[in-house]
Amino acid sequence: MVKRLVTIFSLLSLLGLPLSVEARTFKIATIAPDGTTWMKKIRQGAKLIKKETQGRVKFKFYTGGVMGSDKSILKKMRIGQLHGGALTGGGLAEIYPDIQIYSLPFLFQDLGEVDYVRKAMDPVLKDGLESNGIKVLGLSEGGFAYLMSQKPIRSVDDMTSLKNWLPEGDQISQAVYESAGISPVPLALPDVYTGLQTGLVDTVASNTTSSIAFQWHTKVKYVTDIPLIYLVGTFIMDKKAFNKIKPEDQVIVSKIIGDVFKELDTINRQDNEKARNALKQQGIKFLHLTSDEEKRWKKISVKSNVILKEKGQYTEKMHSLLSGLLQEYRKKNQ
Image (cartoon, rainbow, N blue to C red; front, side, top):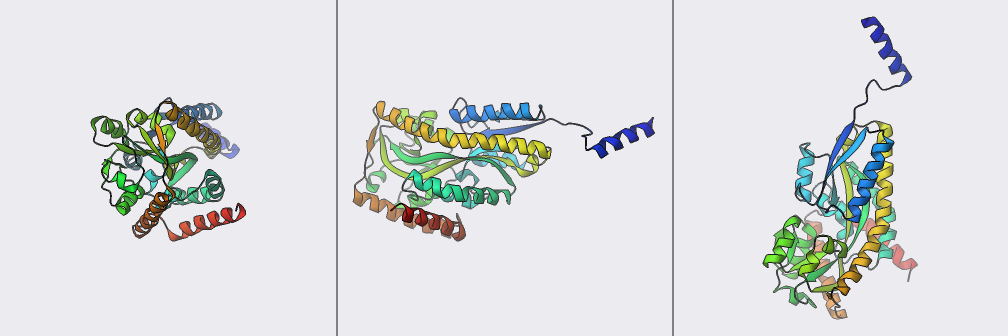
């Protein structure tokens, strides 16, 4: 009997057939609220993955910040409580600082520049994270962040008397506030709405869709219409966890999630524009800066970039690559 079993297993092995099929359910957390377009598309992708892998790969999502901030999600990934997350680029900075290179203040002048740079640099950033033990399944546009406030902001001076929110662990925003001589109020993202309610903060920086998704728009009256930073969202997994599934299933997961995020790039841009119009329709006023004030903001951004470089928040190599691409694009489009 034993001899027969050994023979059967040997034949299966020679034929390349699996001796057993182990289904895996990956636990993925995000601060993104459930019901958003972003989460709907990701769930659709997960459903297709389950089908294409015949149930061998499944995903369980923890949305709306129930697993804490991006920092908390990464900590839980390290101890194996979670296998991955849908995080912001800034949330991954402690693992790979260059991932936030797109979010340097006042970097891009328009979305045409964004598209040109990302086409060349997205693969480089993904490789950088992978070398640090992170598998990037998707990278998508979050859009530009704007200052949203309960009182009008037309100058840097206007901000000094306000209670400005600093996202927990956000070194870029910290450097900008430091350069402007402003003392912000640090808060984890799930606490921002309550902070706006209670008056702990009265000013946030956000893209338009997130301001609606998190209901912050109900607590502000003004948007200062100058794009501060460009935001990206990522879908990541612990590389060791990802490598535990069969190679053919890895291909399926990478293809499906990759396609979802390509679609999200287009959808998110459209949704940000729709959200912008929705904010205007609800009576929120969009304020414009004078050219002199814009120059003042850009001087602050130069100063903050120096601080960030000194703190090792990006490498000179990556900054040079990005700057070269921008110069290339601007020269072609003069």
